[in-house]
Figure 1 (cartoon, rainbow, N blue to C red):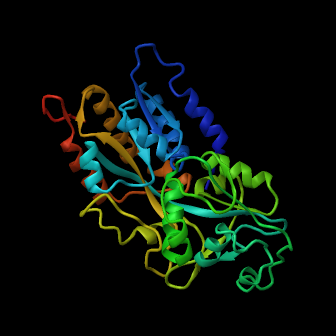
Figure 2: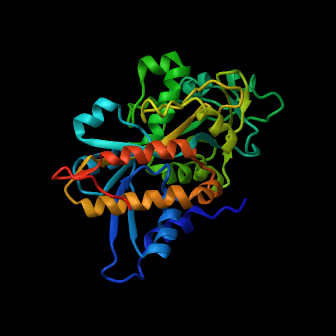
Length: 345
């Protein structure tokens, strides 16, 4: 599999449409850093195909939700889905785009990708500040034969409102009772320990610079930056690697036909990656700028039809055809101010 460096993708994203005509349409979006490498790749390819520019700001899920609620962008993006009653209250419609995995990444001299094994209990205790050294018995017991240093652990977490943080803390709340009672889940929490980085890219860069650190990032960032990730013990009791197949296994039981509010952490299955999540787009059901909304939906329609290989190349899991069909049915609820349905054709 050929991997395109994320920095190059970001550069391509920034210049997408730079050579297009002044009158070319521009669609604005903001939010999650989790899918940003893929949205960059989609945007660049879509611009070349249609001359429409997608201007997406990778600012974190919290900021994305604020911007779409404030109607300053055409679409918002978040890895934390909103519950159906929240969507109704805010007049929003949400739909998933792809599935990915959040992975613990470490910077420990001599430890190779996938060599370190962790459980959710231990991971939570590290971020609680209870386990403070890499040679703590709780870690060494899981890793016989792995040389772990007598060195202080430096936890790294997100400093901004983050859907990746929501997925990570939602998982920790399911597998570590003390984490659930003391910290809980959310796009932003009161971290007991650690230093903060902005965005998935900020956490990845921080971990790369800081010896004996641990962080959590979307898998594409770990792969593209050649970072050492940990294996995790899943709910079936198996230590698993983060892969397209293990993300797909975790998503197998999602009931998309009931609601697009689906949380995919700690799912059953012998092959399931325990910190899996979908990423979502939010748009207003009633559109003050119907032409902009139609153009945004056309972009995602194109991405569902043409973007699967790009998703695969960046280690995201494309949605099954039946889920895409459900999404397009949902799009029938978008209207202009007069109540006229917005056409994506």
